[in-house]
Length: 367
Ligand SMILES: NC(=O)c1ccc[n+]([C@@H]2O[C@H](COP(=O)([O-])OP(=O)(O)OC[C@H]3O[C@@H](n4cnc5c(N)ncnc54)[C@H](OP(=O)(O)O)[C@@H]3O)[C@@H](O)[C@H]2O)c1
Image (cartoon, rainbow, N blue to C red; front, side, top):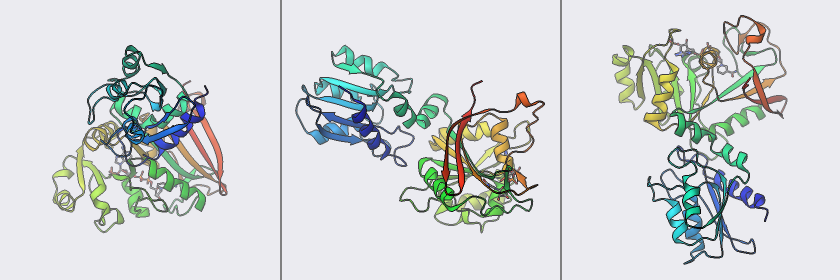
């Protein structure tokens, strides 16, 4: 039987968890009878809530599943977390067959769930639409293996590589369609990060507009806590989801106290070798303390430069407007590259048009 169309349906279901399940993975499941008819569907709906397999089994509401196949985007878990192991339930319900998209990247599972089902004499097929299913949980994989958020770098630049005029003005380099796409990307990540100068210059809200989805957390780098309190980012209710990284001395200041009392999270951090806040520490705190599995870095130039210098980028989302600004603010600052063959090379994954712009997605090349 060709399980791919059914797995595609399970992926569609998994996507419904976007914005609601992180740092848990997005998972979809369906149950079919011997003739291939779908009799139940489920997906992981909320962090810590029932898993997709459980949702589908509950929807089917049968005592035994001897003549049924479970199709699931990610390998069923085999350990006690916030919920009991799905493998036990599947064995208990006597499923005939389980079809898996991708293995669970969690080292606690990673193949052991499949082994357990096989040892209970359930037929297991793995690797159906494996890449698509892995892609669904690339944020989760980074978080669970490396204890750091998956980083998307979002850039809106002119064709000659500027993100703003020399005077800092950047509204609007890209077209409306590109900006709508950025809104969509914000619905997919747990947090967005920007540097102090961008907050000062643009006074952004960093919220999701035009989509019915939760807002990402906002992460700001401001070593000396110089940002004025009347900025949009500090207004209610946004400040409740704002995390401000600063130097250790600044975290003990009166301003830090005022910000904390207003509900803003203050996180003291040491400097790195370049004299900026240490981004590795920022990412570790975001993952371990705030359960942030994915973050979109939205600028500006100094922040983009730091993320590249420290090799912290997993994916690039670059919107290129067919405009020329000449000597403006370049996307990236000094990277100390001594020769062309030492340039940071990217593998372009996709290019599409968004309105009048080009939207390029890329990753750092493995070469
Ligand atoms: N078109 C676009 O895609 C886009 C996007 C965003 C912004 N912009 C534009 O970019 C301009 C601002 O960019 P910018 O380069 O001047 O400033 P920025 O990157 O927004 O902020 C840089 C500041 O962040 C703080 N910072 C703390 N830790 C850092 C670290 N590890 N790495 C880098 N910075 C760190 C530093 O100040 P402290 O040391 O005082 O903390 C630093 O000066 C604005 O004009 C804005 O409109 C354009």
